[in-house]
Figure 1 (cartoon, one colour):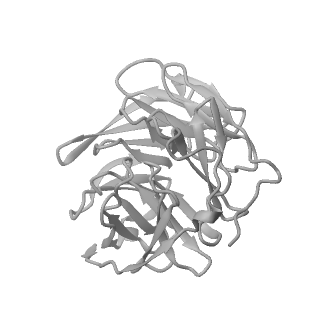
Figure 2 (cartoon, rainbow, N blue to C red; figure 1 turned 45 degrees about the vertical axis):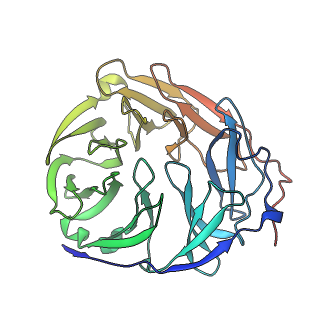
Length: 330
């Protein structure tokens, strides 16, 4: 495994047209998060409070974008525009502004964010390559790369901690393994799984949650210095059935996993496991502002579903965009 240093060349600041900015509420109103409309290539804000929220009109992004990943703190988005440029969009200002990120590796499959949203990484599982983006809250820098992850096995999942540690799940041969890569350190094998279908870190911690869809288990991987200990916190006996996504509340008290038909709320330090029925198969567990809410679906042309996690998790719905929703043009 080889560590290499990279550099960032800051591109020209791309001002996003203020005359095309339209919203239902001002930016000083409560904002829960953002959702990307893949059909129009536009981002929409989720305004209001969960249970009483709505989607804004399209936020103009200079031109429609083909891909967008919003940070877990809902402050930034990393997007790819029609010219193939990778842009870091600052969502905290009005109008939003974007800086071109140069030096991003070719063929990135997607973007990982740490739980606090201040570190990110581009990844290409098929090549075993990961490239960090540091300083999202100040001076963004495309930095070091980890190469050779595929030498650990066939990569089935990745997660990123706030410190830049990487949890890697591999599969093959009737089972799989978990490896932890602290920043600039060698990989450590920290456990085995049958099918790691969901991975996430806790905010500000080196602890992680793993959903094993084949074993019907949720594993709490606790950090003790530079070693990790796996604790099973939910099984079939708790009603768990084929978990396939994993998340954790901002205060680190609950894990949440997606299962067919809804989500399971799992206390990490004792208590009863709860189920929230959404009559859906969640397509994501996207953190919303507030720390204990997650967006379950992502198509803004359909009513969106979100869950509030706790002792009695509740599913909420967010109205869909109007059919005649205007799309900003420039």
